[in-house]
Image 1 (cartoon, rainbow, N blue to C red):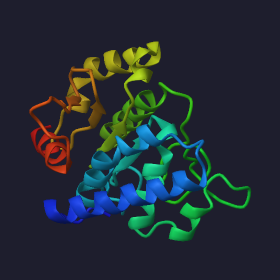
Image 2: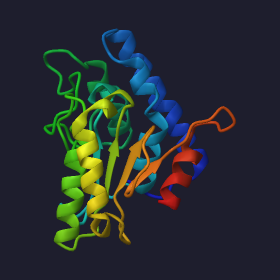
Image 3: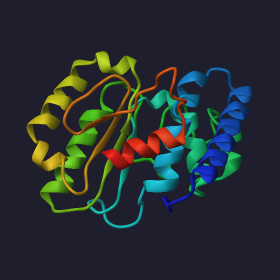
Image 4: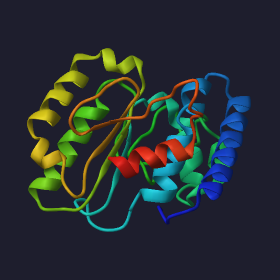
Length: 209
């Protein structure tokens, strides 16, 4: 999926993904619009520039949308990547659609069924640990919301990640996206008034990880 697209290509993709989200929302106002739109640049950059989906489980990359209510953004990105039909986006939440309110592993491109907040990071750290133990080159990307970081399980995962920093911080690092947290194995993408959030910011964070 990731193929080294230019910043300009990624920005155009992000616009298309936003349009898909808005169309889905027009069909179903119960979708979480804000959470979905706030994830667009991160998902676009990871999926279309860095994510490696080929290979066995320890040598491919994993993408975990811990804040599962932002599923429309993930679905739109997967459709643009050719993993699900665009027509499915129009049927989101309908009884005959594979796309429901939260991601499920039955959907192509989804690595973890999410929706119960606070669990994605623990799963991601576990996958990353297993990859390192087995000598794989896979990377794990966990996209989190701010509210779920009040969960104790998130901080237990952070503590575990720090305690196994030799496994986490290697030439094939695990990159955890969080809005408000710093720590070993964690990359914080800052969003200040002087810094326009966008794919360039995400790309810079990944390069510096």
